[in-house]
Length: 441
Image (cartoon, rainbow, N blue to C red; front, side, top):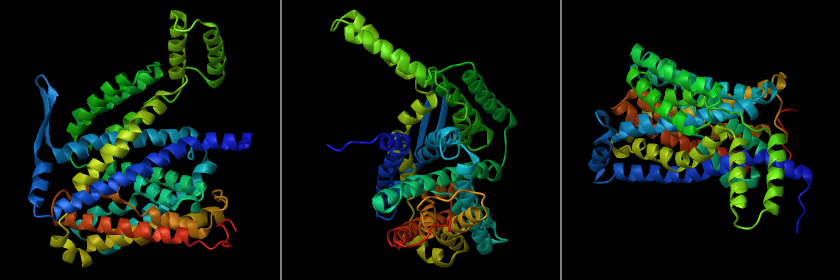
């Protein structure tokens, strides 16, 4: 039997949250791909009209006299995707508090790389669409789909260093932060100030509940539903409510590690002395359960429970509702259209070049620490995987173009560019020469 050393156990403990996150995202990426293919097959089949009819069917949700009526497409994009952005907000808060973004030296490289990965694709899009109405889609190629990117990294296995996987994840999270800011600032047209104030008041109440020591997730869920309804009616995209509410979720535990260990050992000793199946034994077990809850933060608990639903239901449903495009009707126009050229080249070329160039400059200038045992070519390969825009790119495309030819063309470009980025990134990562120097040299 192989003995695990103390340093190895410590490293495994540190990596375990990321490993679980990566496995869920990677598995979710497979479901996401399956739903994308189903949507494309249905939208290009003789039954394509039933696909559109399914998405445009009105659905009412509510109770008593209070009802919200939207079609299925809007419920997915405005409702379920708010949960996705809520999870993104939880991940951002966790990374800022204890993860790769918790210190400037650790966060500098993914932050600088993410900024480069936003600026370069946007500039390329501007070059092809400057002065035209479709220029409002400049934010489409700036984002990264974490699920797809981690899915590719998982398939490549041990040929990709864990530190590079963590870097790509942190970079994608910074991408999400920038994308949310862009959505809030550039894709909000008319604002109902009263509804917005009500929404912000709800989020403020959630923050006060945090400060007051409220730990029950159901309280935050109730506040969140009210905040979502208000923000939805305000004109600001409802997903912004998900992000803001996530920042108010408590990240502190009632018991710290030392208190939990001390009280846990005492209860285990009592449990050992208790009679089997006695009321005392059951009371001790229930007390242990309470201590476990008190030793875990609401943020971690909610994130842990929500992530599988997002990975295996919400995001695949979004892909199913948004990836369906009649390729045969638009492929000829898409080949030379400014939108498709801007998105395609932005994701396939602008994203990796921006990530790689800014990473190299950040390390050479001493602003950021280099990634250990990661070569310049691997950084470029990771940058290519960041060009898998998919989910977020489709989301922004819907905000930028609504319905019509530009949206259909942008979907084709996003799908083609995302698969091309995945293929190019895989080639660069698998084909890495053994003697290539790291970017620090």
